[in-house]
Length: 454
Ligand SMILES: Cc1cc2nc3c(=O)[nH]c(=O)nc-3n(C[C@H](O)[C@H](O)[C@H](O)COP(=O)(O)O)c2cc1C
Image (cartoon, rainbow, N blue to C red):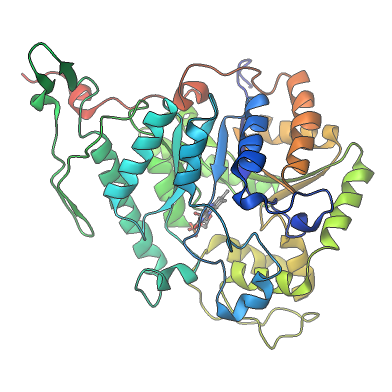
C-alpha cells in the first residue's frame, strides 16, 4: 500500500557532457563544459534545484578510467575522467551558490585517510548549511592503485573490510564534539566545554586515529551516507551504514530483488526501512515523442567511436579483450578480475544467454553502463518510474541523463511536470538540511544517545 505522502527522491548524477559517450559530440552540446563553473556546473545545479531535486551527485575516480593501452579510446571519450574537477572543490563552490539541493561527492575508503574525509565532508556540511553527502566507494578502477604507490588494489573483500572500519572512524570523528560544545563565551573567556570533546582513540585492524576532529559537529550530525555496492560485501556495507543506496539493476525484477534484499538487511541491523532510501541509477533519453527519443538515441550512438565501445566493455569486465574479434562472442573463460563483481557477472551471463557478440554487448552498455535505460516520451518514462516506485523497486532515482545540459533540461521540463501531475514528486523543499528534506533522521551524538552519566 502506498502512503499518500510518499514522494520519489530525485538525484541528478551530474557529469560534464552527459552519460552517453556520444553526448559531447552533439552539435547542440556545449564545448568545454567540464571546466566551466559559471557557464555549466552552476546552471546544471540551479536547473536541478528549480525542479526540487534532492541531490546533485558527483562521481569520482582518482586517475584516468583506463590504462596506457586504452589511450586511443580515452582520446575519443571525455567521460573517462580525462579532465575533471576534484569533487570536493566543486561542491564547495556549489555550497555557496545553491540554497537547497543536497551536494553529494565521492571519496574512496581505499585511497584516503579517514581524517581527511571526515574534515572535508564536515566542512561542506557547514558551508552549505547541512546539505552534504558522502558517496562511499572502495575504488574499482585499476589505474588508481598506481597513483598511490600500489601495483594493484587490495582484494575486493579486504577493501570492504577496510571500508567498514573507515566509515566507523569517520563517524566517530564527526562526533568529536557534542552539538553544544562551543560556548564562545566572551564574558568568561571559555571558547568550548572540554567535557563535550571526545577523543576517538581508535586502534583497529587497518587504521589508527586518535582524534579529535578539529571542526564542530556538522549541522546534520553526520553528512548523509551513500553507498552503491552491488556485491555481497557491498550490500552488507550499504545496509549497515548507508542512508541512500544507489542501485544499478538492469531490470525491474532485478531492482525489486535488490530493494527487498537491502531493506531486509537494514532491518537486521535494527534500522527502519524508510530510513534507507534506495535510488537506482536510471539512464534516460527523453523525447517529446517516443520516436523523437529513439531518433536521438540513434543519433547519439552514431557519434561513438568503435574503440570507445570496445574499451568500455573491457573496463566494465576488468579484463583485456585484445585479439578477440569484435563480431565474435566473449571468450569462454574470462581471467579473474579484482574490480566490480556484480556487473561483470551480469554482463557475462547476459552475453551467454542471448548469444551476443562483443559489439552487441558493448553497444548495450554505452551510456547506461549496465543501469536500467528508459528511452521514450515523458509519459513512457513517467509510467515506468511510477511502476518502479509503486512496485517495490525504488524510493526514487539517480537520473543519468544522456546529455547535459540538454537531455537533463528535457527531463526537468518534460518528465518532471508529468511526475508532478501524478503527485509523485515534491514541489518544494522541506526543512533546512538534506536529511530534513529526505526524511532521514539526524544521528544523535553518542554521549546523548546513551543518556546522562549516572
Ligand atoms: C550510481 C553509481 C555511482 C557510482 N559512483 C562511483 C564513483 O564515483 N567512483 C567509484 O569508484 N565507484 C563508483 N560506483 C561503483 C560502486 O561504488 C561499486 O563499486 C559498484 O557498484 C560495484 O559494486 P561492488 O563494489 O560491491 O562490487 C558507482 C556505482 C553506481 C551504481
